[in-house]
Image (cartoon, rainbow, N blue to C red; front, side, top):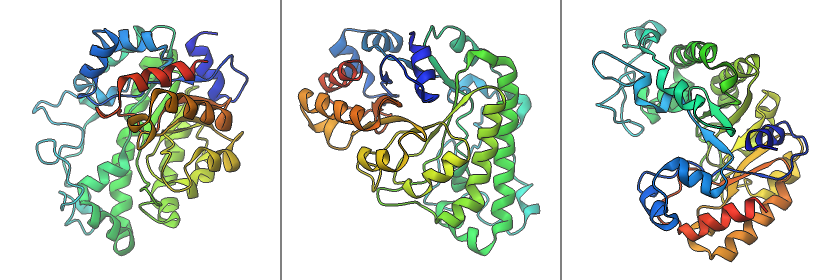
Length: 337
């Protein structure tokens, strides 16, 4: 089986020839360290050397995708800076009409040429794509974190109006992209971090009202184009994984190993056979502090618990410079045993 076939088979929860492997998306400061150790010069060369089965090619993460005449990003706030802890530009909105005054992103500025070229050149590996659609974070930035969460209680109509605006943009942007990409894509991969180390950022009731309906729309759209659906959320999201499965999510990422109830044993007990898993190799203690033998032992343990429906990968995809390259090599080797 090719890498592409292996990962597709795993996410379909069928019998693959082995577990999959994804290096993740290392932090920019980590790449030079990895290249020095492995003797590589490009990201693709390193991924091939490690036997990486998975490529994440999102148009949203490519600068040339959004060509605003003034150089703005999709949801430009303060020269590209986010405002989670501050009052954002929508903080003073008190009615759905106020929401319309914001300069919302425009579909006509989208250009998919570079994203499509990268997908075509990816080779026979699994291609995860689509817009990242981090609407939970976008809205948090637009209101400011405290304002956003408080207004869920005090002015839900405004939050619904803003969410509709943001998510409709992503749905329509994806629709345009999918019409060009077609079978270049294997899976729609999108992400919103709604967990902390201990629990959800918002209550399950708020999740059901403000988040889950849009997850369902995005998931249905991906399935409608024949794509598998992979959802990313860091943190402890155990309380709503069942809801995500019912919404049609096929694979869960990144399985933050030391967040409450996100350890492999608990996930296997509660959800094995119901959803595929991507991630799970602890970046808080094992990958960064363990020996190469510790890493191999941990990978084998995770494979035993969560396999065969498992793509081995770090429990946070942005591998930081504190992870020794020898442990990256050990993770890749044990993943493909």
